[in-house]
Image (cartoon, rainbow over all chains, first blue to last red):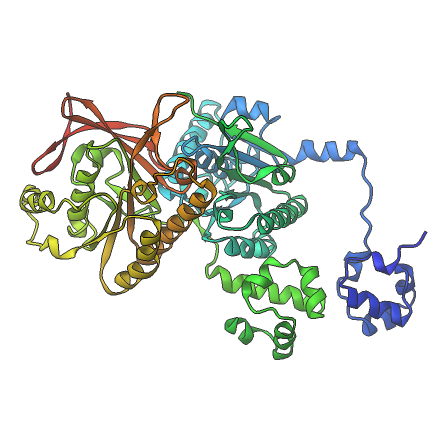
Length: 287
Length: 311
């Protein structure tokens, strides 16, 4: 069974062009390599016809064991997550204002930078803030505490500096967190379009945080929002699998009314979005 | 779109306009396949257009966190409060002060109207204030009293004509508030040095006699107000303070801030004031990205808010 040209992810007019010239199956094109490249300009031909190699579940499991997780600074939460925040997936933290979503994000941005031998990934992070909650001075406080813990841990276990690049200090931590402030849903989409470029420039990115994913979408209409969220989640997950980083979203809560007319609080953005994320952690304050 | 025109080939731009694509927003929100479909451009050209459009819309690059300064602070003039909120209210996002009637929210706002005009070395912003009043009338007598008495505590302070730099606007509903924020305020900010915008109170603009409130509509209205306040705050480096009232939750019996989650999700910091005992008030941090949940006590005197260390 040959793969027909019409099944490729190309605009209709391109497919028609190819068919009028006589190409109906993908294998037709490979035969006359030289003429093909000049006749029809499709630079991404290889990507289009590429069929992914199948891998066994064991292969994927072994990859996951090696890829590592990011510690959240809470032992119980790390255990519940199976070690920490997973790479290549979207983990969402939702909850009412003041429950600690931004604080968790700050901790993750610091912890991802810990050296490999103490549970970190020696990686950098990108922090996309959409709700004015990025307090660099608070981030600095958290970084300072983490460095102090790290140094006392090293001293306690008499671990000497393993290499000259043992640069886990507050300045390097702050330097390795890349920040951008977003004020609208259009800017958010623009940021995701630039994401591939940013990842190619900083190959050490192991964490991308969007705090919050729901804030810029408040003014959009339902249909536009659903489409946008789908594209965002899809594109991010593809990039995350390729470049090996973890994705964190923070989401807020909204009030819904049950059929019995009583209000209850539920995470924003609805069910179709809920199906696109991989892990949801709901935070709440104990009175 | 004009900037984009300069960055890409004119023939490519022509095909874009022929396909009816007139804004950067459309380029970014349509997926690449759909763009290729309607403009008949090839994959590389589409990629290039999208990247250029994204670059123009973003207007800024990734910065490292070490380059982001701490938020500037506007001191409140009350020692105990300033000591628990890192020196004062943040010049970032929207700060809410919530409390029941008569607890002292307006008193604090009036005091901020003065401290905003103090010089930077004393903790002020050296700029004027816009005071948007949605309740009754503006308490001008009390303001005058404060103008006479509050600055006396600061011996190094030069004489300032405080009243000259406080711009007062009365609004009674959302539509008037919207017009004030979208039309009048940008013009004022462009021509005068303003460091603080106060809305006293935000709940007052959304009072309705109707039992059935259209919550979706109200959500959109609140969103519009918050996004405009954030936009102006960032553009002109202005602090924003909104006061809010409390309402009783029928189910739990506790009192909670008005306007629900729709508003709570839009603010950056929430500070609460409540009665402690007699005339002593409690100021507490309900939530803030950079502060723990601590509280302090204060009392309202004729010269302003006075902190109490041990009561």
